[in-house]
Amino acid sequence: MNLKPYTFQYPVHGDQQEGFLFVANSVELNPFEIKRVFWTKETPMGVIRGRHAHYTTELVLIAISGKIMVKTFDKMGNYGCFELDNPAIGLYLPSMCWHEMTYTEDAVQLALANSVYDESDYIRDINTFRKLIDITHVK
Image (cartoon, rainbow, N blue to C red; front, side):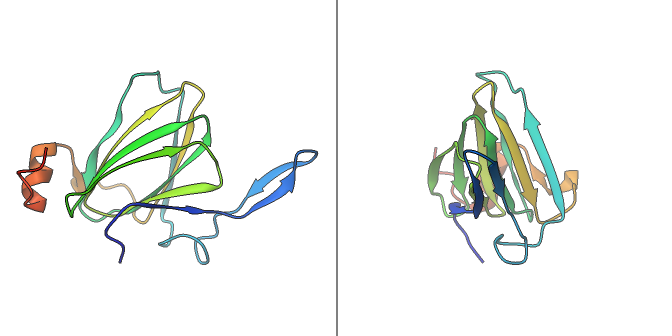
C-alpha cells in the first residue's frame, strides 16, 4: 500500500504521422482496479478544484491536454506539488491525501478511481482532515 503520491508512465504507441495511443490497462499498469472514470474540461484559469481528501478512495490523475498543477498534503504530513502536462504520466493519489488542482484553460483531466462515487467518502474541510491525520501543527 502506497502512502505518498507519485507519478508513473503509461505506454505510448504511435508517431507524429499517425498520432498516439495511450494505454491504461488496470491489471498491468495501475495501482488499483479501476471502478470509476471521470473527467473535467474548460475549468477557468484561477479556479481551484479538488480541495478534498477521501477516506478510502485512491485516484490516478492524467492531463489529457493542457497543464494541471496538483498540490497534495498526505497523511504523513508531507506536502507535494506536481505538474501534469503529458498524457503518458499518471499521478497516483492514495486515500487520505488532500489535493487541490489548478488548470490551464485548455486542460482536460482524466481521473481513474478504485471505487464508485460515495459522498460519505469525501473529507471537504482541511481542518477536519488535519485532525483525522493528527497533524494539526502543520499549516
